[in-house]
Length: 362
Image 1: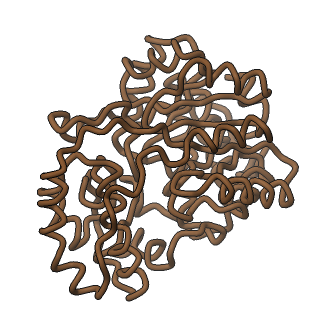
Image 2 (image 1 turned 180 degrees about the vertical axis):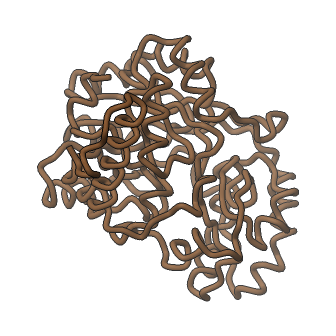
């Protein structure tokens, strides 16, 4: 299915914007140069840090790319619950010889300043996570010549995306690694979720704008499946996390296929918001007690995660990963795009009953 967005890149492959230093300019450039859509993650960066990465990326590729923003979160966490969780983490701080972070370090992630930068220096695509931007924000980005994508985890959220005027909805299934992009995260919600294939079908019946499917996608045959379900493209995160250009910590990359970490779970342990990661000691011990308090817990645990990485202890790191993590391939990102495209080509040929082209990318 061709849309104005997918006309920007030859293959229906979008590299997910993974915050925390994973989606670096060299990764986005490699994906875009190979025919996919590379993304930078502005989350947890300053506005100037985002701008410098955009400049660096533009020096690496002349192909279209995207930038992802976090929508500011309403404050609903009880300070008492955060204080109690901090008390429970005191032993972790002692073990890693560090201090806990300040949970009051900020809630809006520099949202307005980042938007101002993106309006002054427009990029081809901007996506939003954790909520829907105001219609006037969408209109301003459109006037700047930018396509707007917004994550949704339910059909109802997709309708809100459509009503805000966005061009594309990213249907994020529960299989996805990292944070679920649900628009509201109340304590009583727990960690619900719908599988990507079912979600794409529901969203397609609810809104009339193109859909990008996300959630556990690691192979070209899975891309073919979500396209057959009605998506215009597939967004892959964990698949690109393992590539040589990814900025992920070496321990994180190795953990994806390490039998010590055979499964993933949705947890609030590291950030206070449901996020899928490999089950390690920290997740097991603290996940059941973590309150719904994002970004308070993200700030609180940041020094612990940094110290664990410095100590070479994967059991204390946030090892974000989707359900397909055991299928990760440590290829260069450009080569991975080519392999995925060839697999997609073969899957489509098999579905149509025609012979493949010998595995070559067309």
